[in-house]
Amino acid sequence: MAAPRPQQALVRVEPAALSPQVAPQLVAQRLNAVANLFTAGKDLVEAATDYLKTREAEHTRRTAIEARARVEVARIQADSEVLATAVQRTFDQRDRVLEGLLAELDRAADRGDRGAVEAALGSLVGVLGRSPLGELAQFHRARQGEHVEI
Image: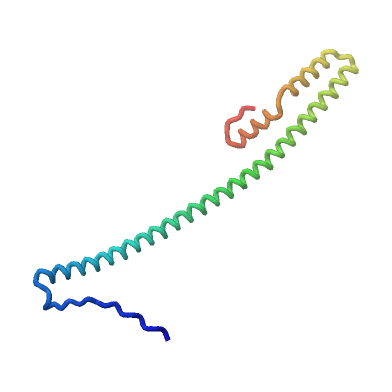
């Protein structure tokens, strides 16, 4: 069995021992102490409530940020796939055009058609002078919703 706790001595003041001026002051002090306890308790409850509200607001904010991050990652992945496909198609198309122009150059040279050779060479210079990345930049601007002239 646990040892009994020592009792704290309460100072009791007999009402008869108090002067008429001291009794109201003592009562006021005790009431003030009780009021301070209630105020401290109220402040503690308000602080805890504020903390819980802040914690919930921050949790909600983090959840929204995480959701936006997931959407952005998905968008970036989709754009990456689209861009990779566009790059591949751009270079494939460029290869076909260059192969066709080189074939036309060969045919014109075999025929001895100087005008067709010059036209084929001019077209080759034109195609080679344009960067395929410029076409991809236009594609990217179009994907972003910017006005692009073709």
